[in-house]
Amino acid sequence: MKKLGAIALVLGFGLAACGGGDVATATKLKDKMCACTDQKCMDDAEKDAKDFGKSLADKYKSKDDAPKDLMEAYEGYQKCRRDLRHKLEDTAAPTPPPASATP
Image (cartoon, rainbow, N blue to C red; front, side, top):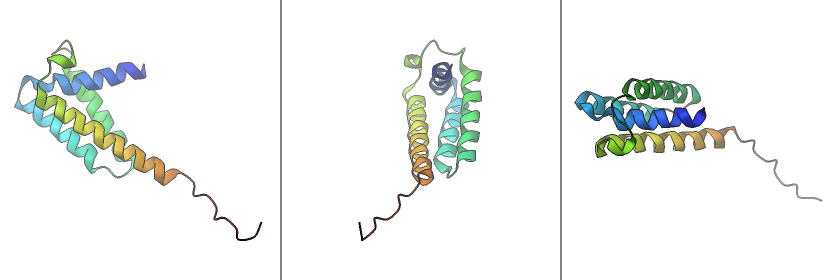
């Protein structure tokens, strides 16, 4: 099921090429994700992106049919999402206790 959601998201960005409005929406979603600094923002951006992807799923058969600028917006979204996820994971990781000077 998770894979299906990822495919829908890829297709959503990839399929958005039918007009400037869709390209603008894809870019706006990328910018939204790139501006996120916390989990709630990330979750909200992902929901918006999934909804957008679902609305465009009938427009193209695959991401290979999508124009280059749509795929670039999607790749930018994915990079920002990945970077934020790593940042949040690093912040949540417990700090190891300091090594003691005596054994």
